[in-house]
Amino acid sequence: MATQTISVLVNNQPGVLARIADLFSHRGFNIDKLTVGKYTGSNVSRMKILTTLDDVNLRDVIHQLETSIDVIQVKAVSHRIPQNVTWNRLRNLVSSETASFWLVAYSLFITLLGTNLPAPLYAIYRTQWNLSSGMVTFVFAVYALVVIPTIVISGQLSDRIGRKKVLLAGVLFSIMGSFGFALSNGIGMILLSRLFQGLSVGVLNGVAVAAMTELEPKQDRIKSAFVAAIAVTIGNALGPVLSGFLGDYAPYPTKLSYMIHFLFAIPSVIGLFCIHEKIQPSLTPLQLRKPYLPKNIQKPFYLSSTTSFLAWGIMSLMLSIIPSYLGTIIGKNNLSISGGIIALVLGLSTIHQLMLKKRPIRTLITIGYTLLILGLIGMILTIITKSLWFLIFTTVLIGLGHGPTYAGSLALVNQVSPNTFRVDVVSSFYVVTYMGVSIPILVLGFASQWIGLNHAIEWFSVIMGCMIVVSWVYWYGSKS
Picture 1 (cartoon, rainbow, N blue to C red):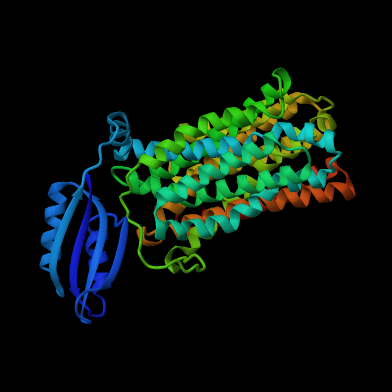
Picture 2: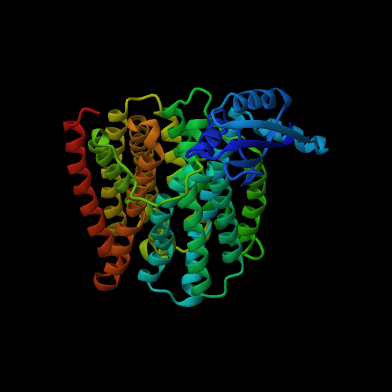
């Protein structure tokens, strides 16, 4: 491969620039730089195109240009720049479809790991800065409020500038969030750090599934959706285990886990920089719009996104209130136990997704909803008995219920999404999902200041259980 400067003399005619740009994009080649200026006559212009091509592709492109309408002359100059052999080998390794697919999955995993590192440490932040239950839930949920618009924007942005650049920005935002937490000295810095984490999650969730589907050698939509769902849940599960253990037994309890996350994120940044995109970005300017949802998939979309809303609404209870107020709920305070509960619920979610991945989608939802309802009943019994064992039993039920429910809903959305609008549809799905992450738990947090935390959790469990029953009825009435 070499950097090529292609000089093209063209007649000044409407659409000539677009036709030449399309010639490159349709063949999967990037235009690194494009300049246009007048030549000797007013009706002739010179276009200078900077691109990277090997000799075979260069000859092909020149031939296509020479046979194009309004092209007068084509010349090319090759600029071969010596490159580091190790760097070239790395690029060749990462640029394969399979490696790129798993690298995007790893980037999704490492981003979600960083996002969930603060979960067990909220108990420390709550004590240090005397935070109310409403403020704790707001700190937890603020990233979800940032995620929602970010998902919408990042999906459309990736269509214009390419998936790779947007994914790289998402991982860098994740690193900035970890640095912010490590350096935080008050609630303001924590809120800013959660904002960066929200940007990172919004970018990755908005683009990763589409990128993985495009990079998967067979473009298997179900496989891409399941791998993405598992990457999310594993990242969420390992984050609190790491920060909870280090918070109890290591020096610098509120800093060390974030520094470790930074080290694990470096390979993601390097790898994403090297991957080769199959879908080339558009040259048209970005014009933000409301995500388009084709009419023929609206019914399965609303059904699946509502299911994800409920699954993550219940999961957010296990990720925020339970670890932060463990002492109030069961009379014991321990960061390792808090982190262990979060890891258990998310780990079981992941395992159950793997175990049931070949089951029909409707079966996944039936199993998931049954276990979630039993888990909500267990939550009420935990509040009444203040038993750690009831809490563990409840955690197991909710984790096993969340996995198939979330994976099944995402699989249905990815399955019915047309290729042209997959980013729009998946982004809209995650918008509803993160409304589930933020809205129910925010209402619970502020309600607890009026009726008490335990009563608020009991009412939360009853209301979410009733909503599951209603959704379940619609699933059985659907044709999905």
